[in-house]
Amino acid sequence: MPKMLEDTSIDRYTAVAKVLAKVAGGMTLSRAIRVVSKAPVLCLNGRVIQPKVRTLQRWVAAFENGGIEALAKKSRRLEGPSQALTSDFISYLVKVKTKDPDASIPEVIRQARELGIVCVDDRVSRVSAWRAAKRLNLPIFATKGVKNQHMLRYGYPHRMLMNLGDGKHFRAGSKSRRRVVISFIDDATRFILAAAVGKTETSALFLACLWKSILRWGKPDCIFLDNGSGFIANDVATICARLDIGLVFGTEGYAEGHGKIERYHSTLIQDLLRTFRGNPEIDADCASLELRIEHYNAHVYNRRAHESLAFDTPESRFLADKRALEPIDDPDRIRKYFVITVRRKVSRDNIVKIRGLPYEMPRGYAGTVVNIDRHLLDRTVSVLHDGKMVVLSRVDTVLNAVTRRRPARKSKEPVVYVPVRTAATMAFERDHQPLVGKSGDCYEED
Image (cartoon, rainbow, N blue to C red; front, top):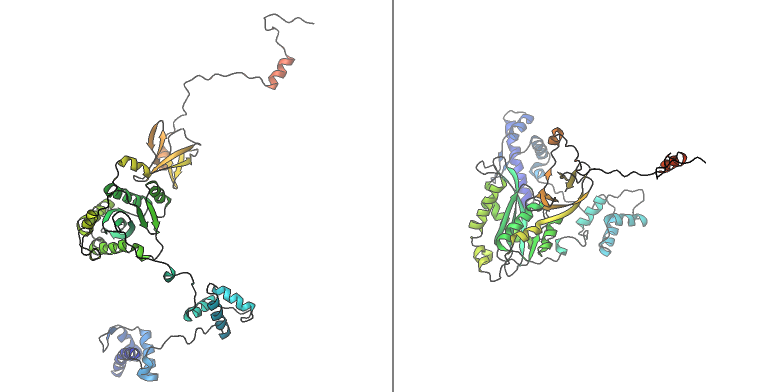
């Protein structure tokens, strides 16, 4: 017997022997099996097992019929590529997939029916054919998979040439609230540039982190992101285009492109994030968590020696880099880049919708088309009204239900009515002329 099977049969025999010992002591077989199943069984090699009642019943029956050899694990390995498919179809499958690797399994089945290899009335399972092709190591996915992608591990020579951005979900506080932290790391130096904490991974949270990084260290040349929900929004691409920042989205499973920030996340979990979950001393407020993570980045992680940096610290490597930073000279001007203007039509009840959320407009815009400014940093919505930017508020339907409606505004200028003559007026004047002419004289009868 193979060694693996021998060890397994001995472990099972230990449990069977315990059952048979209790039967020899006077217990019935069913009661002995129930008693043994309730307690762990210590095997000869130190392994502890606790089989269920049904498992012990099968082991005892197998031992009584075939001895200890019957307790060995039976190999479930299938003899041959398939038992559900005919040999003719399997031969044709090998022939087609070898000649045409891109041919799908349903296509192979259809071809086999056309050639009479498979009868028209016979149902050939696509799953069985797929499994047979997998066992025969046939090319199922000819152009997919990591091995067919041209991946290169890269590293930029100077700071702020490439920033890596990514989010990490975690839980914090006594109630284990869901939170996410978005971080930016410099590719060349592993220096953590900024971090922002929110409840969900949104484009607004990403842009807040980007704004913080730009205020501290200036504008990077390029940003590498994954395909997270907060990164693929149009707002992110629009703002990066305005700031002249290159935006690169990595492909799924491209660890060589995103491995540095993933390694940072692993360290962040071990050092800090795993202490937040269920901890009553941790405030689950996003600002409080952001303060803790920013303190860790600035005073612990950035000042810790890294083996990948020849045991230098990210902070010293970042500050010693000779490439000049690009600080912003006018923050107010850059802040305007984070405002997106959209055109919306105001409903008859003076409501305008922004990203599916209703906002209440000032009075007098019902039915018109207006320009709405979305401030992505402070997440407000405003409109130009009477020469001033007015911040719009979300509609409060409960308050509107009890608020009295104001009367319509009356114009201060008097209304001048200009008389008009219609066809009916002209017909009446023709049939009933006035007694006095335009000069005041009476008409003479003919």
